[in-house]
Length: 161
Image 1 (cartoon, rainbow, N blue to C red):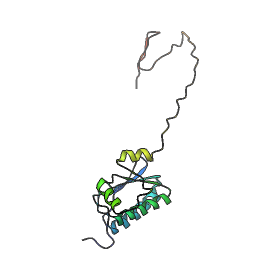
Image 2: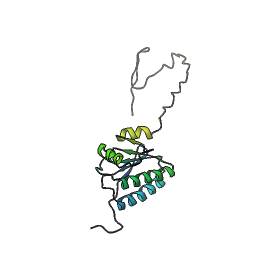
Image 3: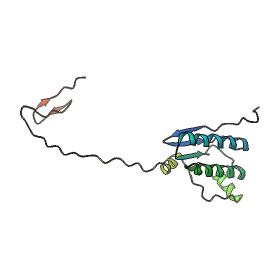
Image 4: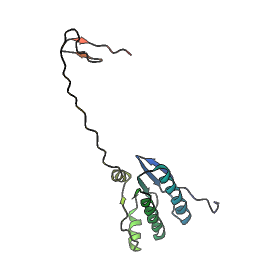
């Protein structure tokens, strides 16, 4: 039996620069309160800019739990991070809509990969710097290619370590 201050912790890990919370437990009041504290402390400590709330392991989310999740997502935003809900089941969505739960503004995806694509800024590869080099052929100093053959001069180069 768990004590009054103990709750089932939700694992948090940083992956690809995002904080990922993998929710695999029923979201009761105690779990949500502890999760909120752990999550906000981790955001502060790690200074991440994206948070993924993976609820694919949760088969039941009632209106109260969803309202708490929305509040947590608002807190994440106030701390300067963007949050995405991932893997919410079709039956859960249908139930929330039937209960007239406000889903406005909740950003959600079906998969973690989609969430990472949204949260990761477009990574631009640095353009290659091309430097023009004038090569002056000098018979006393042939051009050598490391570990290969300079076919033009027929010179084989051995690379010794």
